[in-house]
Image 1 (cartoon, protein in one colour):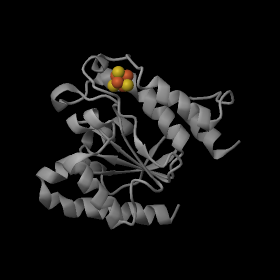
Image 2: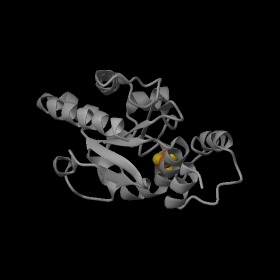
Image 3: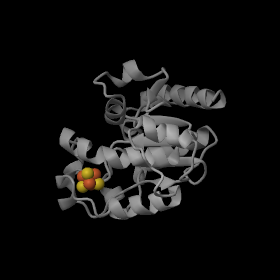
Image 4: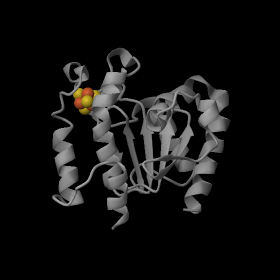
Length: 205
Ligand code: SF4
């Protein structure tokens, strides 16, 4: 059994032999823009699936698209996106190479409110499929919402940082969301610690 099939099986996504990964990506890129599973489809301009290398070792996951992302169809644009790009550059990465960036939710909650549990439940299959197709070596959950959703926990970011977690058999590290860091500059040093920890973890994988 290949590593991909092991991950898919752990995520409850087998049997998967009907489609090749390329065809599964094509299918996902058709399914998500047409999705009406939760009420957010009524207020979105467009879905925001993700951006980057579809076979990346690094997968960064945030909360949900904001206004600019909803307008442009790409995650992490604007000031938070610039900060994320700087964070990636600090550990020798960029969003075009060996990195994939996405959110838990694929549609923008109106007014950037917090996602509702029902919206998360309805959107999670898209994310699960995405992760299974990418097969990253390491997942970075950015922000409280992504961390709590992926780890099925209500623990604080402070208590989840600095440890190696697991999601569907894949290593996962928690750090702050770039939008939070823009409002809380002193915590940038903690985010840097998380990235150094992530880089060291990746080197050992
Ligand atoms: Fe579908 Fe997710 Fe958008 Fe809801 S947020 S409509 S589940 S793609």
